[in-house]
Amino acid sequence: MAKQEVTKTEKAGLPAEAEFLAKLADDTEGEVLGRDDISIPYLRILQQLSPQVDEDDPAYIEGAKPGMIVNTLTGDLYEKGEGFLFVPCAYKVSYVEWVPRREGGGLVAEYSVAQGEACPVIRDDSNNDVIQKGAPDCFTPGNHLLKTHTHVIRFQNKSGNTVGAVMNMTKTQLKPSMDMNGLIMDNAISGKAIRYAHQFKATTVLKTKGDDKWYVWHFERIGFANKDDILDAKAFAEALAAGEVKVDMEKSMDDTVAKPKPSDNDSVIDEEVPF
Image 1 (cartoon, rainbow, N blue to C red):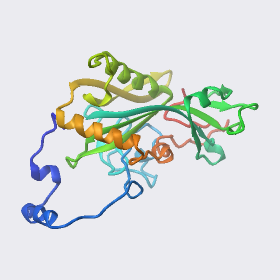
Image 2: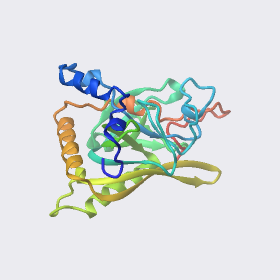
Image 3: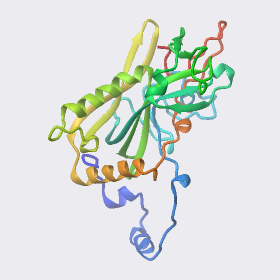
Image 4: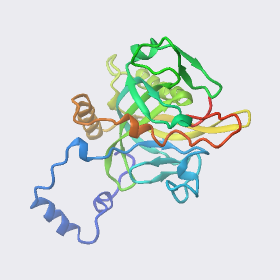
């Protein structure tokens, strides 16, 4: 990807026998792997309650701190100011129903915007939209309903390979998501918003409210992507649309929700921050 050029050897992460391995690849068909055989990376912001920053948690990553971005597939960390470059490929809005963590947690279902907006909810003290009695039969009263922005991107990971990845945004992360969409609209091509024509940089910024501190995404548009990146992103977007690549919503959200700390009033934080 542009602005992150590396040598051929570095990009492939190959040892000294690079020529031998290249010849091996030429002489071998390789495996055929379907979408169910491959894990797609998820890129998440680490918060104070994220398991990756807790030394006593099995998910702990050495050196992880709030405000960093983690690649959930590789465990790679990106410093707060470092971030990464990416080309957006696809975007959708949906509503996701979750069982509250105090009741065991877990994904129930994903719904369209029309379905989600038709479901009666009341916002609780932790800024969770709680499904109310009288909701359509597909919903369960008492569960949480999160409006969710899903961005699928192509980015260069720390091994130098350009791969697909997912960023899910809810609650306080919706504003940065809309900001990125606005930059795409403001730089339309012949009146058309073409998502995969642009290159962005993702970093994080600190937000505060009273004594609470948390990090949100910050997206900067670098400019138009180069031709090869645009074509790769376009092909990836088409694979998503055809169902050849599938985003597993449960996997994408499972460790983004902060683990609640015990409290006297049994309040549960089901996102990075209680707003």
